[in-house]
Image (tube, rainbow, N blue to C red; front, side, top):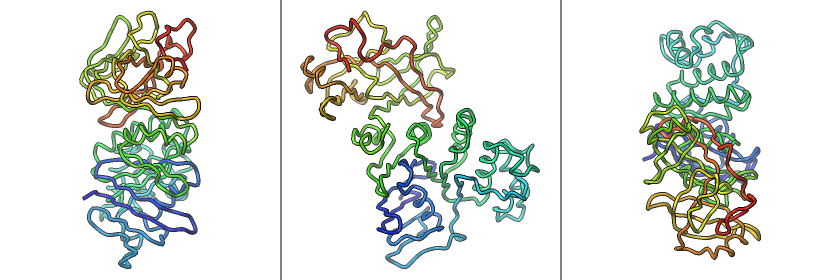
Length: 386
């Protein structure tokens, strides 16, 4: 039984047709453009708004079941909610903002403990106006945890801070997750943010969940790019650090017995990482090229070809038995190389992005400086060009 199971349907005032689950200790990202119903779903889980038809079950307890007339009031739902604008009381200190949410007899001590967990113990007496955006976000997170929640809901909590602070908060959330054993639901319109932090993903379009599953499964669906402008299909590979090349400043990653090389990152051998490879950054060759600057060249076999539109084709290439890489090439290239399922090819990977699989903590986006463009001059005749 999942720790969180949600089904919500209604036609008005905001159309919804959503169903998803999240296990304890996992983070599910609700991804979609503005107005797609993400925040409404969070508020329905929390009991802040009603829903015409639905069911919400948390840790075996029914919070909402419209068919049975069950709708627990918000005060009876043990939910931690971090609002997009943080919703802190301006006249209260950070400590008081957190303590007011605690039901414990030692609320002040509990609040100090939570502020320490988010590294704000030295700023406990400051009011929100005296805190930076990132510090206010930490107070809001501590207040959400003060309720000893059964589920944690995060409504675009990083949208109000700059990129540098956002990266710090990503890391802090990843570390905090290691201490929590409750489902976490994150609302975001940023697919990259979802990739970095989430285990599972549900993509929303006008209130309807159009794709749901693990991050790997959702990102492998070419149709997602059509639903979300700016989103590209790709592959999410699970790897481990296998070594470092001091001479060339590279880190070596093992992926299904093959090796990926990326600019060095400070990770111990054996550290699990996730590698995101956009389909547009993979070229295909019929033989192993030796006179190109692309560092990563993986042998595989075409599993399937699917026409994306009049110009492009998506090729799924199987690397070994457990790894698949998606490449987006032109139809002209596919015809010129006579590509078909079963044909052996080499995947030429021009860029990758990494994040630690154990904590969903992004290390960095990696793009080799010498990676050639997709249509490089003088390219070998048996290499696809976009």
